[in-house]
Length: 242
Length: 242
DNA sequence: CGGGAATGCGGCATATGTTAGGCATAGCAT
DNA sequence: ATGCTATGCCTAACATATGCCGCATTCCCG
Image (cartoon, rainbow over all chains, first blue to last red; front, side):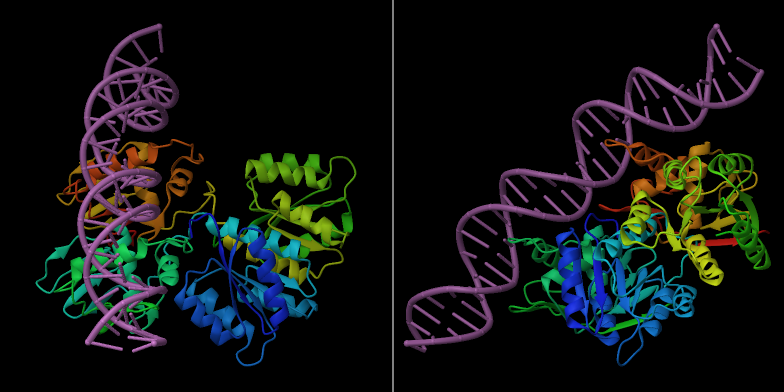
């Protein structure tokens, strides 16, 4: 997340907390997304690029700690835990699990903002050495995208040069096949921005990408347009490290 | 974070707190040094390599906040503030100054330990000189970088001279393959500077390095450009002491 | 105090991405 | 079916980022 405005995901089952906090953070120049459950949070994490998660521990359904553990393990985003429990042992558990910070309710929004900034400042710094490697290669309809090399190979084994933007867009699609992605989501996933009023840049990126990977760009087979909704990747994606 | 024991400096004017805490941390596999004033702390910082400072705000003589500010500015070591004041505004001030965390007295030693560990874990931002280099040699795509000798060997076993800047840049990449590094991060990693407004020095270093290690510098295969993001090393890195 | 290498700077050429405007097309109502 | 409107697509103009050359400056080592 090397961008100006950070994208914060707020996870809490209380609607008022979610909305108050979201409003406060937005007012302070951050983008926000809210989720009322761990499941919704996972979905949001998959479908947008989140820079930091503010996470309530006590929630019905999947526990906040469980989600926190998952986030830390997969190194997806730094986490600030939020909880009503003020007891030492609980605080310790959260930190030991690997949360980046911990705030107890009721909290001062200004303090939370300060902590968010503090954590982001650290997270923005140089990534750890030798980070975990995720999926290496994604295959679809005879094509192969080598994510490590940022290289696309066509069905005849020839390398097709992709620009950075095209690569990121294709990657966003391949990671979410058969899902309708709005322009907003795509823009967020590819460049971490939010949609401008007359923003046509995604249309153009899609158009350019189609020209490179579609047999007949006029009748797209892989990236289909969803009228009024966005785009969907309809190819069959297989992932593997082989 | 170093896998060996971290060195913690405890700064507090209360003798009992210093000693209790020092004993507790030592028991938990950390090295400790204590200081009873800001002045003594500065001396300790000068004379030994400190990984983290636990700092009392309220002290006679130079204020803890003042020392904290200095530490943050000079980026010497991460700081955890310690204080009797539990009020929000004070906590916020500490964080806004740039402290890495904040604990109020009376505190649970176990919580403090957890916070120390948390801060150390993410304090990888600034390369400390004492960062142990774990591996002696890094191999990639037929090349071999001998970090001890600061020597690069090409696939035909011929030594290729690298300037120190090129060596550090290559090392930064090899330690973080597949990670997109911004110019700012690269500059930080190679020379500890921060990015100027029209700073193109990294571009030049990358360009020079490419000319030495890329088969075809016009179409880079090892160091790829991420438009709007920075650069990423896409080669396959193996490490070993052999 | 030289002299050569290394590094940084300015600038221009190129690559990449974004914005604008007009045309095409899908959806919808009549 | 017909016509209206919203949405998408295409091309071209514009804006921004990067590549890299040549020169100035700094650093290093004797």
